[in-house]
Structures are given as C-alpha cells and as structure tokens.
Length: 471
Image 1 (cartoon, one colour):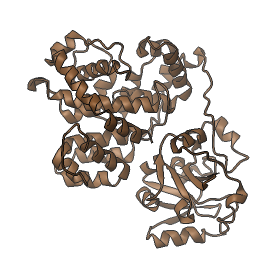
Image 2 (cartoon, one colour; image 1 turned 30 degrees about the vertical axis):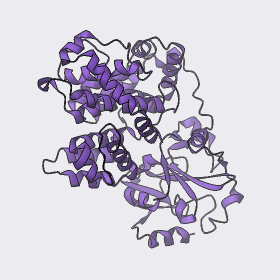
Image 3 (tube, helix red, strand yellow; image 1 turned 135 degrees about the horizontal axis):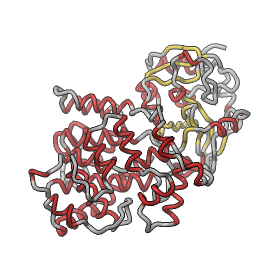
C-alpha cells in the first residue's frame, strides 16, 4: 500500500513540502537502521483516545509514553484508549495499525507533545508501514494550527515500559505513572552517573536560535519579533506579561513588536523567550513541592521580583534587568534536569521533601543523592554555553557567603528566594534576609517588602503565566 490518499491530499492542499523516506524506526522507538540519520525523538506516533465527546488523536514521539491520567487532568476530560473498531474505517487507506500523526487531516481533535516542535524535521507515518513523511518542524506545527499543545502528559519511556507495549499498538501509557521507591543503594553513585552522561539533553532549537540572534550585533527588534512569533504559545505569554499591571501600560498590546517597543524592551523579551524555550522540553511530575506547577510558579514570581529589585540597587552594582529576570526564571533548572533524566531519584527526593518540609532541600539532596540541584543545573548550563551569570547563579544561589564573579546576581536571587519563602514558594533555607547580602547590594528591608507586595498584587497574572508554562 502507498502513502495514505487522505494524508497526501491534505499536505498538497496546505501546500506543505514533504518527502517520503524509508522508515528505520519501529513503533516502540527502536532503531532498525542506525545509519538512517533519523532521530527517534523526531518520529511522531499517533494514539487514538475517546470519551463521551468523541475521538481524540494524541501525538507524541515514539520514544515517549503517554500519561493518560495527566492528560485528563489537564483537559478535564475522561479520555480512554479507543478500540480499533472506533477508528479503523477512517484509516481505510492505510496499512492496518499504521496511523499517520496528522489529526487535522482526518478531522480529529488533536493533542501534541510540544517536544516535537523543537525538532528541525518531524517524521510521520505515511500510511504505509515501510515509509515516513518528512517535513520541517515549522510545517508540522502549521498543519496543526488548531491543535492543543503541552509537555506534561508524556515522558521518555524506559525499556520496561517499551516491552509492556509491544503487544498493543495503541497502548496509551503508564496511566498511573507510579515511579516506585528507590533504595539508597541505587543513588549512592548519583554524582558519577550524572558526570558520565555523554548525551545531556540538547538545547532546544528555538533557544539556540535566540542565543544566535543575541550574539548578532546587527540584530534588531524586528528580527526578535519574527523569531518569537513563530511560536504562538510563547508569543501569547510575552504579550500577556507586557499587559500585566506590573508595567502599568494602559494601551493595547497586539504584537510582539509592540511588547518590545512600548513596554518590555529588546533585552527583556530576549531573556523571557530564552528562558521559556530552554525549559519547555523538560518533563517532570505535575504536582507536589518539586512538581512542574510549583517550579513554574516560583520561577515566574522570582524572575519578576528579580527584575523589579534591579531598580533599587545602586547603579554601580546593578545587574542588567533582562539577565536578572533570566537568572530568576532558570535558577532552579537542576530540578527539571533531575526529574527529566532521573525520575526515580527525583521521586525519592520529592518524597523526602514531603516528609521533612522543614529540612533544607540541599541537605536532603546531599544525604540522598550526593549532589544538589545547584550543581546539576550548572552542569547543563555549561554544556549549553549559557551566559556566565546564569551558570554562576545556578551553582551558588544557596551560598549566602559567595563573593566571586557575578555576586550581585547570586545575591539578588538569594534575597528573592528568601522573600518568596514567606509565601510558601521556592526552596530557600529560611525567609530571613541575610544582612551581609542586603549590605552588599545596598538595599533596605522596607524597600524589599514593598517590591514584594507589588509583585504579589499581580498574582493573578503571574499565576496565569505559570499555568500557561505548565500546559
């Protein structure tokens, strides 16, 4: 059987260029031809689900497993695996069991794991079991303009999960996502295991393009706006942020260009976009003190407060507001890497935080893992060639005695963490404000609490932004 007529007609109608290539990867993400050059993470897998409202197509990389419980929580639905009888007539022009991941071509509501958007090229089943359709990641997104995107309803599958799905082509996932308890012996060599990683998660392509643009001395606001506007979700988040009461702008912001020129400025938009793009592919559990919701809520408040406090610091010691925002947004990135790459160890730490909420998290990390999220985050930032300020903040933000390079950024983030601790956000050891840091930055406590109050007053906008980043 050749390429699906429905898929071919849809691509032609949308004027999307594509090519047909041999399929080197089976439905479990296992390479059958290692010389093909096709990364498994770029191959899209379609999973059919249903509820009382009808059929839904979930599209995830073949390397991943769908977490149906997480998806239902996000969508407030009761989706369950569809039976082949529910949809086989729709795919009558396809080899049995081969479902092209082009939901809108077949008229299905579609939900897409947005890690696919970070791929230069995306590969989908052609309808023939021996072929894939190759298209750019941008074209793949354009084909799904009405799709719902998210990054918390699937996770990279381990070998056990893959074996468990071998007899079910439409197996949706580890529905309960139970991690299991990990004994101390399995984490005794945690540091060595992380240090021996040779394939740290690559920097997302959008983040790479943002860094390249930032390094271009001839780049201007229109270049940045065009880049951000290619990601509708990111663009919407930046526009929402520009319209928040934090800036007091009374006019209407209808485009990224206006957000840059009228409110936020080039540097701030650059750093917001970089932070969001860098963190988007990382998938950890949704709930709990170290979960994705807690991470992004703390990150958005921290970034906003870091930016606000810059104006209060004497000019000679003042951090750049855009870089300060990025430092606040990403300073706990180590939690994301730990949860994404070492889910069992992350669960062990998370459970310990639940049991001992008054014990400093770095103390628990040293006890259970032998390494802290500060170190883990710094290793990844170094691998990604992120700015030196960001790497230093990753490494030192729990060190109140730090006096080395970029100490003003470290001290600023440390103060913000202490301020937010009083509002049950973040992982600061204490909500007390270190006098030495206040002195080094030339700040007064009363000014800090006024800035904190102003930030908390914008909780509706910041909480909404956090929810958008989780979705």
